[in-house]
Length: 160
Image (cartoon, rainbow, N blue to C red; front, side):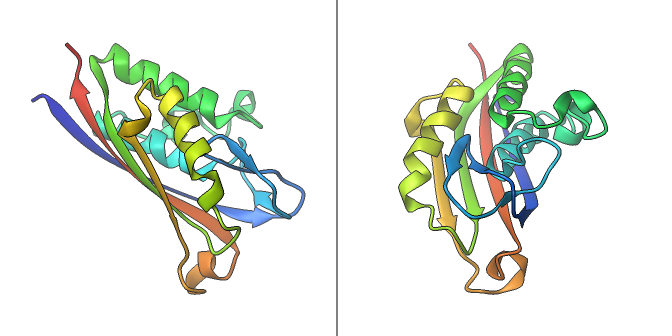
């Protein structure tokens, strides 16, 4: 087998007093995501997709929220560790497609910097990383502005 596919999903609640970080990019907003780390739902979904493609569990197993070492952790740094594990297993990212689900803020102006941060962390070309943003038309918890969610799908290719 020369290819593996993985899917990741993450969600965090929006709260006051936290920075909003998505795809490793700080976005000016009146609220941020609540979590043990920096709560970057996009980076978390990407990590879960990569780990899932290789049947390596999820980020909760690799970086448990019960471990104080990960309190406030930079999710891009954690993603780099996941990518090292993927590469040590003989695989590399072929491509990544992700969607951020948020009623607000508008994310169109931040998608390219997010792609750049994720591509660098994944040791991939910019052309191999796609990020989209959508709302849920005021439906559900994301539509009411209570939280932000992200989905990610990746294709891994065997190295060499």
